[in-house]
Amino acid sequence: MRFEVADAAAFRGEGKYGQVVTNPPYGERLMEKAEAEELYRKFGVACRTLPPDWRVLVLSSHTEFERSFGRRADKKRKLYNGMIKCDLFMYGK
Image (cartoon, rainbow, N blue to C red):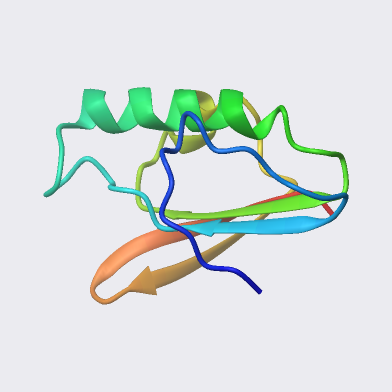
């Protein structure tokens, strides 16, 4: 297991298998909604370069996350991050 802080638009997966778990800014406190949507878009582009056996899990309260990311989640779970209603978007096997 390796933990890393990386630019969401520039990260690259190494190896045949892997998993990315992230809790990006929601566009509520840390950045504006439009900035968060652009971050999600860039992250989605970067994720499309990952090998097919990688998984990506994203925790977000943004109601239009999938649209910004550029792909519907394979699975989605509703949960709370503190008092904030969120979805866990799961991509991959």
